[in-house]
Length: 250
Ligand SMILES: C[S@@+](CC[C@H](N)C(=O)[O-])C[C@H]1O[C@@H](n2cnc3c(N)ncnc32)[C@H](O)[C@@H]1O
Image 1: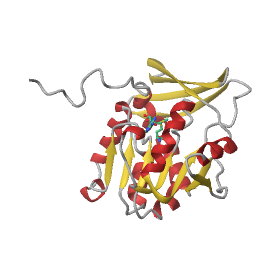
Image 2: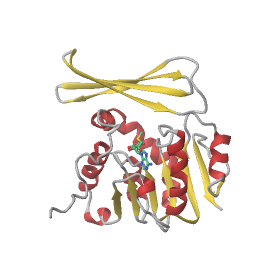
Image 3: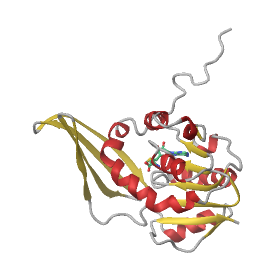
Image 4: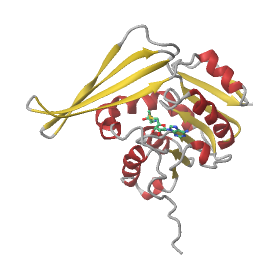
């Protein structure tokens, strides 16, 4: 009898980041690196039990946590396209660092993590979750934290945008090629449509173009606090950067 492969083809979920993963680090890494350090460094430095990076992506928060704390780090990343650059990033580190980080290739709700962290970070993770998925995430975060553990959530947009807006991402040159992109957001009933357009140029000529669309669900700070209160979280005082909500397990 053939044993069933643990990760059989077809069991892999559709990968929402299949296109963006290639462009994620090249177009957004520098800005994001400084941002996650400013937003979470002091918290992860204080971690004693562990740091949980929920939706680790290509590893921006994971790497900062490894470098800034001495605690174990748990990076949870279900999308293979994002987990692959995360693993490459981790593989380039010294064994002293890599032995402290564990990568969990599932949704947090499926990872079976209990009491592994006293600091959990959801950076740029919950805005793109359907409200049902978002609500399913919180009990798993609570279980993964020890009592009095702290959760840091980067808040989704509080409301729908009034107008269509375009954010041009700074271009990067890689050898002969220039990489560029833009993000176009617009309201669509109760959701925010977020379309990323990417391009690669050589001598002004477009070699290729790709696009990928994500959906975001707005939620205000008071609504987020109320949602998390049901899962046993109490909001902490507002931080210098109000885009992040800090809560503590009661
Ligand atoms: C927009 S990306 C952000 C990645 C990273 N935090 C960053 O800011 O660069 C959101 C990530 O959350 C992951 N994700 C979505 N639902 C999740 C869940 N329930 N548990 C863990 N990760 C999840 C996705 O696979 C995706 O890589």
